Length: 370
Figure 1 (cartoon, rainbow, N blue to C red):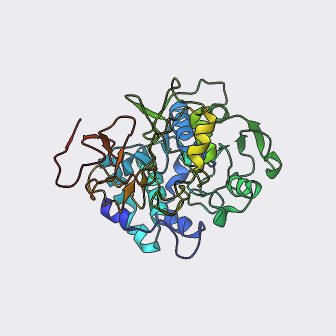
Figure 2 (cartoon, one colour; figure 1 turned 90 degrees about the vertical axis):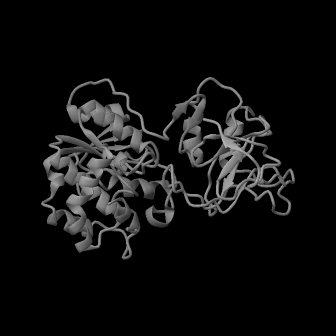
Figure 3 (cartoon, rainbow, N blue to C red; figure 1 turned 180 degrees about the vertical axis):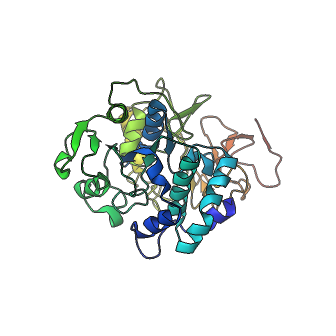
């Protein structure tokens, strides 16, 4: 089943819309009508908000993307995820559903089969044309709005907000982070707040928001902070929540089509006026220059983490200091910290590797240090 879901295209060939999703759910008996829902839309923080609301109201959450495995999206285990896909595969193939449409339908069918009474559904991209916009949510939460996917959602924050808030049905309670986009709503009970206020609106009484965590969302392990922040706004949010201030070594995996700053091998990359990585520069300034100047950013052009095993070879790995390329085994995406000479880690799993960042080669002796 995993190979099948990974084989599906995440992008619709004929444009975004809910028509195919409606047809798919009709063939499945409309399982989304068997439980009450909270719909979470926004640019960042949706998954964490969804999980915390679900824990508070005694329900489950459907989130995306995943870090630990596909099953994470449906808040189930691997066997449960396999069963969820099996319920919808035939119908999904009949209508030519996309990967996200199939996953969303699988979540709805799985929640129905599990007897779920309340579910928190995180939107994928936008809202109006998203596959999740087939539920009649009593409560809608907008976490925040920033410029993203402008080719689909619009060129301004107001246009993007309108796309996201289009999921709100007449009569629904809509919780906004502030009143900025309140005028976009008609026929709704608009409230200001966040996840707790959304949970309170659903339950109809004051509550304390339950804790919940997700891999890769402000995840702290043995002094390492793991987070998926990849916009200036998300970095600002992360900086405000870092543990006790100290020097941090920033390790990032950035796809080759992103603006990650100059290639250290490129002409002029070492000049003082060379472009900086905008996210790391924002972090450096926000922390008052607390980042060590010798910390390396590792670029991983095209590396995509699939699982703990079977990660495709990394086309190249290099550190941000001009001319300081890593002569390490080409099959591993790696990074090295100049503040701790000889310390090298595998970017795939963040497992330390003992070796020399300047002299290690495929034929050298090097080992993992667990």
